[in-house]
Image (cartoon, rainbow, N blue to C red):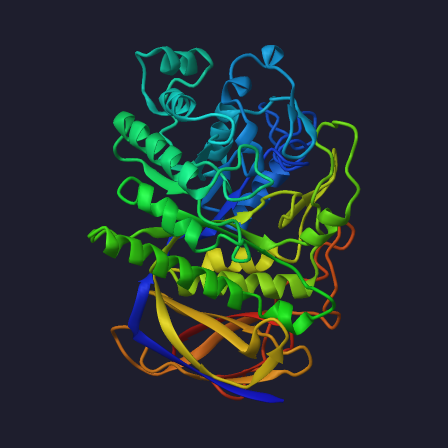
Length: 502
């Protein structure tokens, strides 16, 4: 059995836990919208056609914000197609995902769904095939109370109150050659600056996100951020980061350490942004919006044969996640929390069916994938402040990241106590973890493990299905009863440990 120690310093506050860390993403892609969140005629559907079973699981997941409508989809999207009477809305070819878009769901329906679900909407504008005027028009439609052509059109379409969307993404992945309207960093930076300037003329209080790199492996990574921020630094609040991970060539140990890449991504973008700010003589700090992240087996998509037809809502990117995926996913969540001082928002991509924690059958059941559980537990228990942890543990060698620790952890603390989120990356060995938590909170006093849960399985590739939805789910970990500050963590496991005063 491996041995490790985790020292937690409650006095060393990293940053408050940001509720927007627990955002998600709904794109017009595959079955995310149609037969995902929206399916008229489903037994649980409400009068708007939204699935009640998906709404219930979304609330259970603990999502706080949701980014819409893309993603690659937004770079060819005409927002006007999705407003007004449904029978008049045009059907369009979606070039991003080689599908037909019916436009049954648009901005008004989406915002109504977020209100029912209790979520904050986060809107992306098309800077691929469109530009400044269309972005300002959408902002006017959404946020101006009344008295203008577009705000009055919104009212006529049934939305009397303004949508009051505060956070806006200036395009999507414009560094990617796959993107409709792909641009150089300078071209995009100029357009993003012009768009941001015009949008702030309408509403100075918006939060704006400039496109950063769509992955740390992009050949322009780093130089893209530097050039874009040179153009936009004083006009935006955040720069985006996107990252997806998968197990490659059977290297399970390397996959479980994929958060090392996310750590590198975050530190590099922060350093680049701060360097640009220093060069411009600005005291402003640009935050990160990690508004796409997940486990995604992208290699399967790249290997698939191209389609010749244009179907409506075909099953696309429907990865079925196993235990190891969930543990790697949990490690990515730990990284986002560890960097709460600079990561202001994050969106797990996506919510339903498309590389998602929630899966549905058309007309039938909805269930939780393995990745549902780390997200739901972190959203529920990560409260108050992120506090510093110092692990001492064994390491192992990986082909991609070199030597990495078997233990990955973060802690949060609020008035009720402290919560640890811990991953054991070892593929073979349990890990006996000794905790040194010091005094807990302002009142001081010794601490103990109050409760613990573990997400694990004897088969690291075990999956949940509609017929067996709880095959992989958190279970109580009682392997700490003999010592109030010592617990055994199984190999390949995600663990949530609640501490309280002894």
